[in-house]
Length: 566
Ligand SMILES: Nc1nc2c(ncn2[C@@H]2O[C@H](COP(=O)(O)OP(=O)(O)OP(=O)(O)O)[C@@H](O)[C@H]2O)c(=O)[nH]1
Ligand SMILES: [Mg+2]
Image (cartoon, rainbow, N blue to C red; front, top):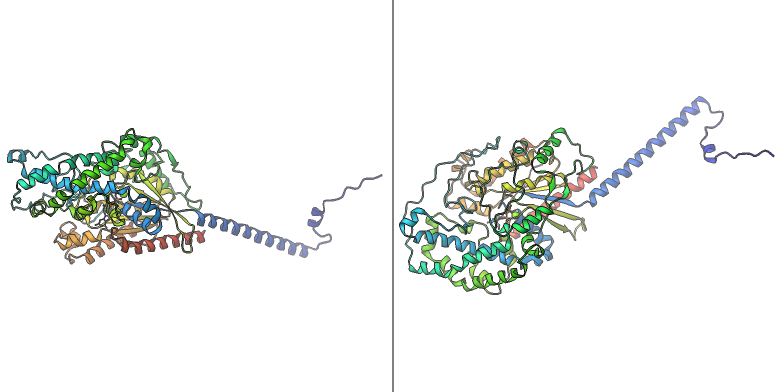
């Protein structure tokens, strides 16, 4: 019996009809080609939607950049206040030690001046000033770790920033010719009574780690170490300025190999040009490609496992608080004393314009049982070491559930090498430029004008090919200090000659700075991009809440737009 093999029904169905005329064949092929094209279109659309969804679900990553003391960490605190208040509250008490340290550093800075002023003339000639206790408010020259009181401030030149060279030093400004105010035995007595605060300062600095002191060493690297010109120099991997930060700093070095810089990982749609690759290669040759592990601002303080003397740490903070409380009245007397104020004026020291100034609140801050307020925490100064990551999940609004990662970096020149690996995968940069600092120099390089450093840094960020798609948002910060400075007669034109004969007021100065930063962005961005800028005083939490909300919305909108575009 013959076996019949049934034919595949699918093949049968797809078989061209028998007896098809050439015209029918042509029409059928047309139909099939059209169907295939529609099918591909649908596939592409599904893929695009999937990509867009993935992109929408990806956390939004924001990098805060700017020189040291520009207000980056203070901006993060504003984000926390607005969107993560419970985590802000969790940390609030821990800031007490930082605030105490900020307070007594101001006091010790005054004591240094009094010691100098009351020393017998021959000793004064040798100026054996106390080694520690850098007065954080000697503002004519940024933060004053280990610096002379009135160093010459290089001008910001004409803000002609085509080269990364340091400005020439001006001749020192003439010091107030008036004699120093007389100090009496009562002041010497205050010196004696407040002497225990020196020890407390050392203990707290040791306890809080490297971030609690400002850089003492001079650093001669450029403004933006990732730029090719700087690639030949080898920046230090980590810098430790405190006496006790070694162990935790070494541990951080050990654990820093997290998150490799991967080419093209930001998103597939982005093409890496030769110069971008070169930008990365220059960087990798210089410092390697590793991201430092993001840490908490209290990494030194809270990481008990890393410390040999962990058990003693709480008593150190508590006994410091006790000594501070017992010195409260004398500190208040010192700060209220007319001769002391006159001495500060004579020495051109403005503690109140410096970071972490709490002397006006001494009675409250030094009292037993003191608990920091939100504002205290915002004004407290703790230098950022390495890179700190903050996670926010927004609960309200159309973007509820969206995760944000905000990276806060250390801004000193010696820390900037840690920034670059974060350039690879971010949506926006908030760049902080303190515009009150046109007459100050960097703590880490007293030959460099702070305004000029900010502009060089901004220019480098704007020029980066890797960052060409990243949304840049500029905060022209410390407007309150700019206002105070101009109001007391400091003339902007003396430091920025291109300011010319414009009125020496905040409105015109801010407008001028905005224009200069905008020009740098327009001139140096690899692609056309919008200029977003805000005039800010980030210690003013009420005003900053409005700015932060606008920034959040802007970044979100941009992110969604990009997702749609995909
Ligand atoms: N008066 C005033 N002080 C400000 C302003 N912004 C920041 N500060 C203070 O300046 C100090 C430095 O601010 P931070 O936020 O720590 O600066 P940073 O940019 O994080 O500095 P690094 O961590 O060293 O890179 C803090 O004591 C702040 O309270 C401002 O707009 N006005
Ligand atoms: Mg910081």
